[in-house]
Amino acid sequence: MAEKASGKVDMEKIVSLCQRRGYIFPSSEIYGGLSSCWDYGPLGVELKRNIKEAWWRSVVQERDDMVGLDTSILMHPQVWVASGHLEQFADPLVECKQCHLRWRADELKDNSCPSCGGEVTEPQQFNLMFKTFMGPVEEDANIVYLRPETAQGMFVNFQNILNTTRKRLPFGVAQIGKAFRNEITTGNFIFRSREFEQMEIEYFVKPGTDDEWFDYWLEERYNWYVNLGIKKENLQLRQHAKGELAHYARKCYDIDYLFPMGWSELEGVANRGDFDLTQHATHSGKSLSYLDEETNQHIVPCVIEPSAGVDRSALAFLCDAYVEEPDKEEIRVLLRFHPTIAPVKVAVLPLSKRENLVELAKKVYADLRPCWMVQYDDTQSIGRRYRRQDEIGTPFCVTVDFQSLEDNQATIRERDSMNQIRVPISELKSTLQAKLEGEDLFVLPQGSQIWKVEREEKSV
Ligand code: ATP
Image 1 (cartoon, helix red, strand yellow):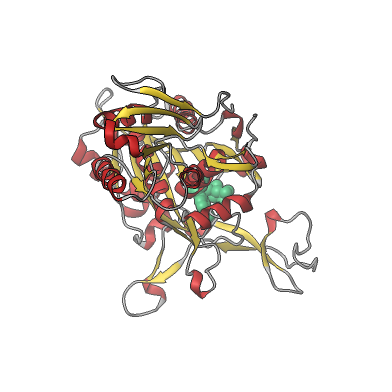
Image 2 (spheres, protein in one colour):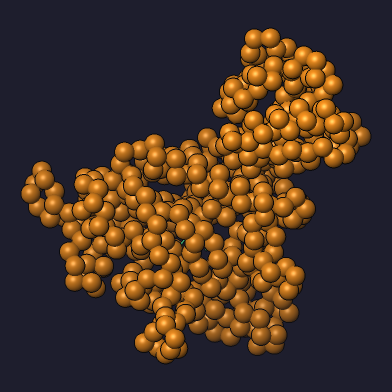
């Protein structure tokens, strides 16, 4: 069966699965929710952690030209003057003269309100930064902003990084953290919210090499999604037209994903030139230059910035993994997550609640838990429990049955093919490790056997 492009997945189905299974809940739900704010439930938090860890591993841990950082959300107000956010980080806002709903002017098809058709006002620039006050007195002198991006924390620490790590160009800084934007229009579930998380890289290079590093990072970031299972047909690169470029950018590409509402930005890759370091040097009066040892000259590096959203990535992984398959008379819903992304890696299921089976299954569960996120489930029929694990995207189930009590073997069942193998319990850990790393299910450890092939034909 051919899989549908995720653009055809119904957003309502994703939202409903997320709420039903504990991925994502509306924020403060018992009070009626708070518009465009979301809480990640027990599975959602694992999904997000896996995304962030996979990103960190690929852009920090596995590279010797990158270091990590974790800077504060509240920063000196001058940061936002220097970065241009105070003046330029605004969207054109219009208000309906009839129903008083507010809209982003550039998102309207004509000059009428999408809700009631009423006439809208002239656009006014609306700054997207959230304001708050530092200290006990609420006056203008104490205004600070919740950061609208994590990037500035990396620029203002440029000298600190140079001094403490002795990195030489080209090198980069990576940061994961919350950002806040008072978006005029939100929606499409976690795609656009007012509080979200970013995974950003600022990669500093010698001027003149910025174009080639831009191409490098665009490819690198595109491949990161593909290597974690996102289908290529659901990804596209889109270059920003001149008029669309942000005030700091020389060049920018979006990595777009085919979300249920259509192609939309998943990550932006920008060549910010030397804009940020120059601006912060000017406004702070501190030198943010770099001594080029080859020429013995002080230079201001250029910056390539791949900026991704954790929440948009989570939504893309969810949409891309969502599959409905006919299964006998029913529909099997599954999330075909790459094992690295799957919130739960293994589920341990005793065939029945008989005491001696439960005892053995719990031993297996305890043994596997230090290695991965593992669930134990002994409720309802085994078929139902498999379906539940399919629906949350667990790659492998381990079933302990009556024969296990005699031969000390257990069954491993694979989510996508539903094929099963039977392996000695002593080999479970190493076998599951290999399978989670991509080894074929039918590569068997000694003493194992192919137990059952529920379905001859795999859905492709
Ligand atoms: P958009 O045009 O969709 O508003 P943007 O171009 O303003 O996005 P950037 O400033 O490039 O976004 O931010 C980098 C990344 O941060 C985006 O690619 C996205 O993944 C994430 N992001 C930005 N705004 C939001 C938001 N309101 N909600 C969730 N994620 C966001």
